Image 1: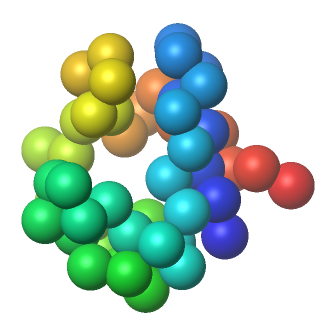
Image 2: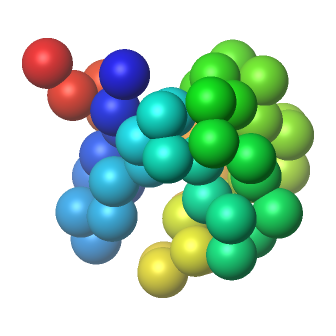
Length: 52
């Protein structure tokens, strides 16, 4: 599953994770820390939408 930042368009892909932020490949969106923010624009998880 992929989640897109509504502000800047950065994509979190669960299969890829976010290694630069210490998030391993395969990490589910719901398993991200509550304080996770977009690495580009720093908005929180509430500003992301599930990509269909």
